[in-house]
Image (cartoon, rainbow, N blue to C red; front, side):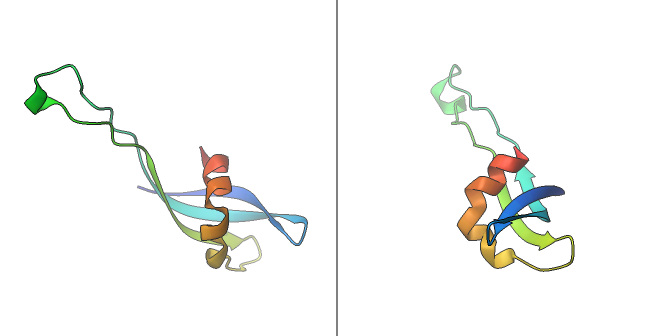
Amino acid sequence: MKYTKTVRININDSEVKAELSFYYTQEIPGVYTALPENCYPTEPEEFDLVKLETEDGVNYDWLIEHIADDLIGQIQ
């Protein structure tokens, strides 16, 4: 499912509000206590960050790969 959330990014030592669009997949718990053929590992939650745009419409998609950990921390 696609979500949008307001995040804060630092650009030239100035804090800027931006809208982050992303897809989120919840964690799927694993099963470890059944018969071996019915067990499977936990699937971790996933964030697919797709768009980062400031309130005035400036696109910062190129920045996502450099600050992805910080952005995910803000939306968790």
